[in-house]
Length: 325
Length: 258
Ligand SMILES: Nc1ncnc2c1ncn2[C@@H]1O[C@H](COP(=O)(O)OP(=O)(O)OP(=O)(O)O)[C@@H](O)[C@H]1O
Ligand SMILES: [Mg+2]
Image (cartoon, rainbow over all chains, first blue to last red; front, side):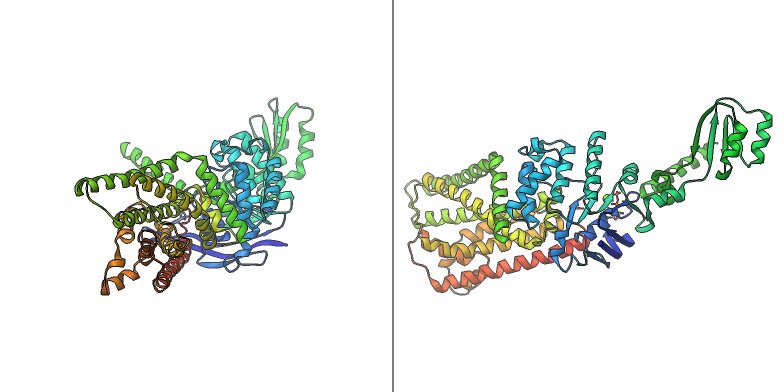
């Protein structure tokens, strides 16, 4: 069942009189129980897309449907959304954890009694029970973020939008939030997650969509994407140097040798290679496996807008150097 | 549902207020000191023997109304600006109630606070100046018409706050305009001046309130109808403008104060 179906979203802003095409062409679909990692360099248009889905930014073109309903026409469709938005805590700083949950529960259309019960259950589950009476201001960054997540879940929404939920958290808090997100996904919610921490995306997501300069350049299941980009090369490291006889036999298999390491490009020859090497002591055998970070860099050309600027600066420096010579 | 929202807003605003009481206390103190200063200097200029008569009472009513109006304006616009920064504003806009409804309920819930604070101020002023005011239940009728005008203007300023996020200067200008609108006794004017005065926000209601509280007169039903229509028009204008501002702000993606 599709929870989110966004089609042909486009948005351009005006900034200091000039138009900026923030989102050029984005379509996304997420089914119940699925986590979509929405990745892209700074300024690619992730936050703009998320806000269009949440009804906070009006798209120039395109439609959003949440469980078949357009949130712009039916505000009731907003009941299906929970969101933790970028950069801030989305909480009332002068209210305690419990009071925030009570308030937001009613704001999302629950009765006060149900809101309170669900609030307590979430505090329990997010390990915040001991802090329920503490004002948000006095909570640590990690606790605030967990509370923001709890608040987004108070009305049990089928769609959860998370814009950089682990931004600014330390290692332990990140692990904790990550575990919570995984748990929440298993409850059958559809989750749209943006993050710059690609290892998190790799661990949590079922699918990946990569956006660059306002356009989606890849959308693929995470496993498939990693498989596609993973090479078929094996590398075998030895503890001792190779003798000339083995050298030529390996070259006949199509392998190459660098120092004490043999590279084999045809995986079906792996056991032939091992026969040749027997009984030399091995250090390790490795298959060249891609990770999301490498894939991301390959696809986006490693460049966001920030990167481009850095490159321009670098070019300038090279020119300076040439002039000096 | 709406009732639950009202209770939730009521709790939220009172808790936030009582948890950090120094802000309220200083607001009350400053407001009364400013008035007392004006009062003392007026008496100094006019000489000790002078009798203010019903003028004094009228002025106190006007001043208390003015501080109520300013508290409400500052509450609504300041709230919008603050919440744009902390990100709670966007959460309100994701509410299935719809933002205009939430803000209207919120304004009503906050009214209890504003009225309580300004009653305290009014009582202090009465004690300081030795003035007696009448509080007939009838005063609620013109009071409602004034409040509609105040909220109408608050939503107009709120719409601007939503768009530009900076309304401090505008709020400062409002102070003077409001002081004029709420304290000048236009009810004693005559002819076409009076007619135009009736079109100004809050003015007809404020005049009626002075009649009731300072001059012990009964309510003029005809004037009250005018005051009510006046308040209604400004409130409707404010809410319409707010809807428009909401849409424009969403178009520009500036809800979070980009
Ligand atoms: N309200 C706005 N007015 C003008 N320009 C905007 C506005 N919001 C975003 N932009 C611009 O639109 C582009 C996309 O921004 P967006 O915030 O969607 O990127 P992002 O992918 O979320 O980036 P990041 O990873 O840095 O959060 C950027 O060039 C940004 O400067
Ligand atoms: Mg962003």
